[in-house]
Image 1 (cartoon, one colour):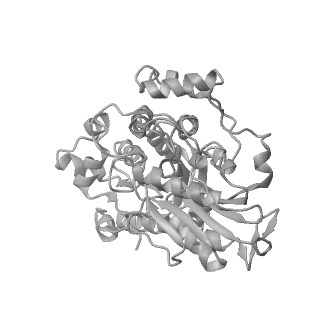
Image 2 (cartoon, one colour):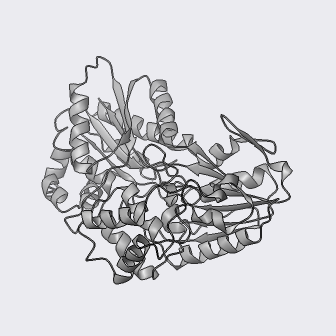
Length: 444
């Protein structure tokens, strides 16, 4: 069962109707995660020794050796699928799950850090580069890329502590993932297409997207993709968030030297290295939403997919979604589905994440009716908490006030985790082994 506190979440419903809706929300979210299981989505593109995509097929039997490298929250499941489909000579995978294993002993599994890189991230990157250097022109490297890869696969141009401080400042400032990854790419020796220059082999990247609109240039900071961003873009982003004078001096130096042309730019579209690089998206949030839609229809609901590209400040988006649902002309029981990735500008000292904050902003808006809302991080962890999100309904407000939990005060403090923990309404899954951003389910 995906949710470790499934029964408690259902029983927290104060009426039989709300209990049923809570159960349905959890079952729909489970179906969404199942639809993007990393093992399944990788196996789906293998037909014998061929990798088959909508417009292209690659025959892996034509290569002398097959190597696997991977980084991201889904990397272990993806690598296991490759090993079960074809013969792999050797591989290195970096994950955030210290308990993860791959049955093929030729694949080395290394634990890195997330959301901030650590020494394991750097060590794993070094091992991947060593392996790539051993490959010949007649070999193929299957690169498995998924969300979290930016932190887990790390070879920085600056001291690791300085990189960690810079990324943490950006995360707390509400920077978007595209903005964040522009900085990461220009402080890295492997991101922004640069990984491709470390090997003579053909590269085939299988990618599970965790970014709105699936930009290959930004997923895991685009290690095998041409990069359209520049050092000047990186400086502009840091100035936009008023961080240019707060970041470590080493970071300012690298960016300034890059703008002056004394440090090489990330690789661009016309670089010949990309002639033997092939990138394919094999799963994304749309696939997860389709799994949710199928399950909701099975349960007898009408379904409205509102968007798969939701962005913006979490507390603003929460209220916006509730207003949209309330204004919708629905005559039957209806499930509303959205997905994407919001942001949080941290002003308080509390704990939580964008999903819990989004739901917390809805508590007063849904008070007194039978609406149920949940927001869920598909990787299993939301912000700086140990849960994946939260669930609320029309009785959440009176339950909270009875426990002296004022939602407005907790929202001001960015303390959504403590609020929902006090009610037993956090979504607790642990690591899911995949990552396609966030999904919101609202049942009216």
